[in-house]
Length: 294
Image 1 (cartoon, rainbow, N blue to C red):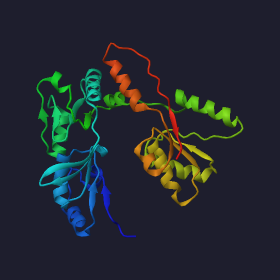
Image 2 (image 1 turned 90 degrees about the vertical axis):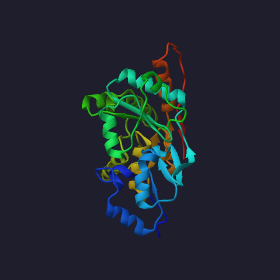
Image 3 (image 1 turned 60 degrees about the horizontal axis):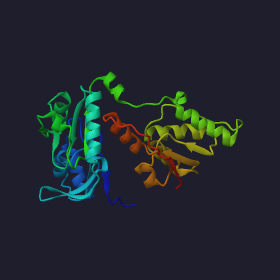
Image 4 (image 1 turned 135 degrees about the vertical axis):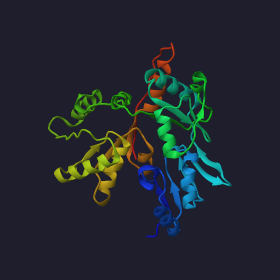
């Protein structure tokens, strides 16, 4: 089957450790004459060097899908945009700055990268992308964000600080796990065995877990702790019958692959939590989880 288009990540994939396209890679891509779309968390201005090195002319994907665009006469021509609402941007910026004042904080709109101080994180990103930030000298104004913000970036080089930034649940001690197992026993009873694997967080984790489970047991159902994990399980089972598979969070991966999932409305919940965290208002918001069968 002929390859019609190549979609590739940039950092850690196409680019070398200095954040550049090597001459050999550039030559190989150009010689293939296969259309290439870059898919990256980078901003368009940070992708421009690679686009020019590879002579790319078609659609490109920036900000992890927040922007699909083409370059026309050296300018970004948006084909699809999905910006972060300005109110959400302000809530996040103020909450992060208050809770983690030492973390390098910056954000992007279509054409600019904004920060209010040149710290270690900003210098690191500059060395990687060779793009200069727009310095906002007034921190209060910086925390107001922009009308068309696509990305908020946090950088930290301290392990303990990174751990503080993570919201984690630990296996069988979590309330989620206990609730799920109570529901399982109510439906199936105690006699039906269940296998629980901990430390599964990524698509590759899901793939490796599926290999292990398939060797050990004939499974009727796999309940994954995220759609990315479910995607890895789905990938492993391409060559054999797939047990009933359910992910969580209704992410793009489950939508594209047709995987059933549970939408916990986590984005809405997080937005409301941050909003109340920086305001005096307190209210109860009821969000109903939704099972989406595909």
